[in-house]
Length: 226
Image (cartoon, rainbow, N blue to C red; front, side):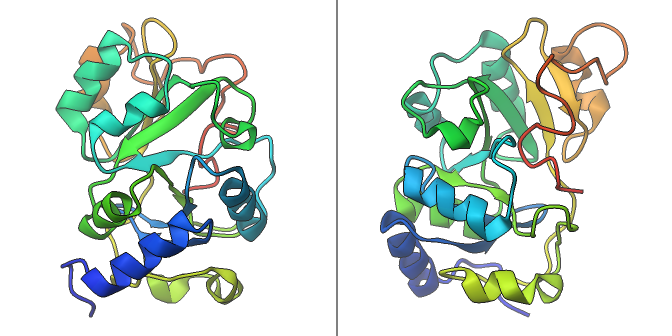
């Protein structure tokens, strides 16, 4: 089984590919991810093409440090700061108001962007080495199951990707998603963080509130993650 220690040579090679506009497969804390430079329109398009993902579905972004989100958002809502302090790095994707310069397909024109600080050591090392925010969509053909075991990855997708970092089986499961562009924030999807832990930061009442109009379980970032 591959080591949990990030392999420096492979990480550096993958980071160079990302900086050059390529896209590849790498482990995240819950599932295997497919990503490239989130600030490159060409890289965003390549991820969409590799994944065969409909362009009306936005993509989430991974960062290695919370400070990196400043280039991705218009501002950080106070509740988002509290959630970042409590659950990053970890299994929580937070939806922020998106900066206007981001590639339009990244946000699918929603005006929002889903961001998570990478927790898996390989993903965190890759984001840091790449020096840019990295797309973190699940590594599966759209409509097919997302996977935690690299042996279950689509062979066609592996063949077309520009790199593949194999860290063995990861824990499984997608991240929780909280929308902080509304007040009070809403839980869009349960996942890596228990709902009871998120409850103090959300609207009163049940953890699962009605989703923001235009942002549903079908069109939030990584809606085809299971």
